[in-house]
Image 1: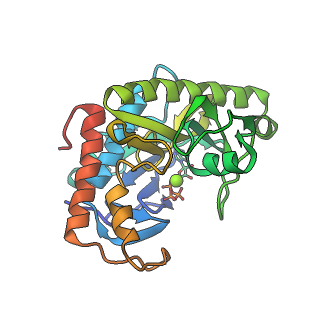
Image 2 (image 1 turned 90 degrees about the horizontal axis):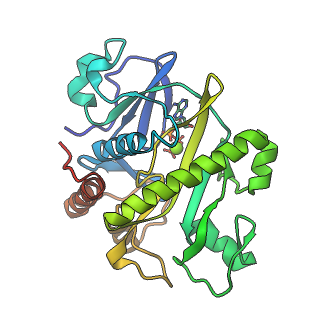
Length: 294
Ligand SMILES: Nc1ncnc2c1ncn2[C@@H]1O[C@H](COP(=O)(O)OP(=O)(O)OP(=O)(O)O)[C@@H](O)[C@H]1O
Ligand SMILES: [Mg+2]
């Protein structure tokens, strides 16, 4: 079964993103990952089989894997536990949803980078720094950084998030919370990137969102999914140019062959691209967890 939307649920919507539909259950939220896919911020009409299950299950795997470092928002991933009659949608929701505690989100995106890519590459090319920190000369795209760097950004309602320095984060959140976020984010990146490498995956960078429950820090949102992280295949890794993204490379490469201006509406995806993209997502899941998607 593929899920494009979740109109069968008659509860207040907390947010509908490009890929996820989140419902407001009062003290908790129901997060559902659909099979929608986006590229260049445009959502496609076609669905990718099993993509929602892959993203939701990868997040669930990492929340469990990292709970010794920091507690998280997960209550249950088993629809049988869901309140408000949601258990009757077990067939639709199983494997692709999560009941989580509603938390007071902190207004920052916590990014950790181990490799030079994305906005860090732009900053390095312009100033020789990453997150305001001087980097060695002569680095090229995709190079490993001397050590993982914490490069937070703001969370903008509209438009792109704005990169800020660790000192600016301290001004925004106060010294104590900012330090705690920094330490948690680096510890999470270190544990997961080490593990990923044993599975042949480089975790180039990743984004977390943190919040508080009764004043206590928790990690929320999603964790180490291909939507919030850059994963590269260690066998294809070659600094000096853009790396192939593990999940979306087929789609992006195919899109580059088109005469599409990367604005709405999206082109129609052929069967072949849908199938290969789905396989890539599933491979990402099984490499990480050692299991197959049900
Ligand atoms: N446990 C939680 N409690 C409260 N809010 C949460 C929790 N977990 C995540 N959130 C918030 O829920 C929202 C999820 O939105 P989502 O990522 O699906 O869409 P988006 O960010 O608007 O768009 P996009 O599809 O581009 O990611 C985020 O604003 C996130 O901060
Ligand atoms: Mg989001």
